[in-house]
Length: 316
Image (tube, rainbow, N blue to C red; front, top):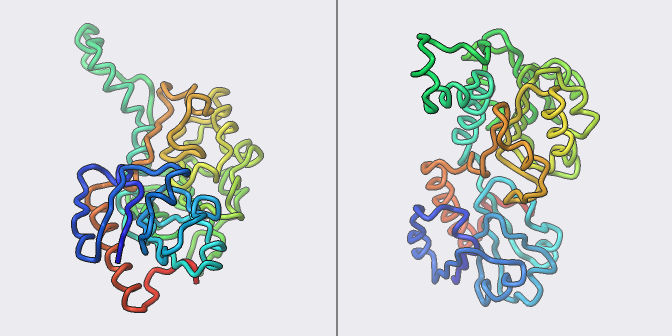
């Protein structure tokens, strides 16, 4: 089998891709623009892709492709209808980054609640040394115990975040599209109005696109902390930025953006230096262990496909 890796740079330069060679002839590309997709895939039967969009336009002229392995859980960059029509199997990797994303989400919440960067800067700037006071307690911060942590999307990652939140003493409430018995489930309106911390872990689908629109953002509890570790397009990013500027939001954390990398015109770019804003470059999923698990699962998906099995298929 010939395999093309289309955007290896997004997987990290430290990830050893050599195990893929055990499954066939491998060509690795650091990145692939839309215009380069057909040429980079060439006569390959399998493509490994993280962020590159594969659809009718970019795959025009590709003849031999039979398998797309998405190096991620989300696959909104793949046109499944087109792939079904062309008989191209599509596999994702589920569950590999649960701990990585959950830990980053909690780290963002802790940093925003405790104002950790401001206190670190107080020491780094020399102000603490010059001040002559044994401590600094401004800006004032609060304990997490007793706060309400709302979780939108209660799959593997949402549940992992919930377990940590409960361990920290928070009351957890969840919004999910298909509530299950035992969930502390609330509707979206209640989630927004009553959560002190609200973290988002939803896949991007037609139903979730723009779910946290301007109206939902306006309902957020004054002073709340909002964290998006899902997909940028699940939210109205301009409304969130405006809520930070107006002082309605107590803090904003985001690891994902509608356009990646974030352009200079992005609503968050203008607020990126604020103490109550924590923005990271879509890295929550990428702990070393998570990326190693992801590659191992991709290899298993390729082996299953060659054996005629339907492991991790999202096109069926």
